[in-house]
Length: 131
Image 1: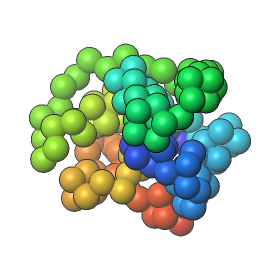
Image 2 (image 1 turned 90 degrees about the vertical axis):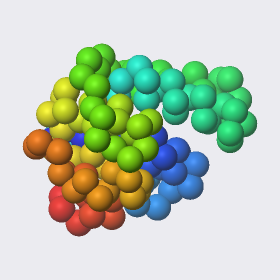
Image 3 (image 1 turned 135 degrees about the vertical axis):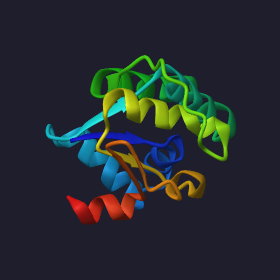
């Protein structure tokens, strides 16, 4: 199973726990679940952790290493233009490029789309109820 997680889901998993952490932990532990990330999302994640949540440089490096070693790192070439918040289009591009089964997010701008090609767009709680 292929999944893409929204940056905010990843940050919630790392800092706050709950369902996002359960999804994140499954992605790390279950060889049948493959997480995908692209340079743009990784840069956004690391920037938010460092500047918004004041993560230390060594913490940011550990997280970067974890993502580049445990998630499939993919360059994205398509440019979707269907999301109300244009910054979210990169998630749709990544999901499309890797043919993700699920895009996991809490973002209402994405959730209203419900499905793009083969990718279902769902919350962490909905994902956990499906596996």
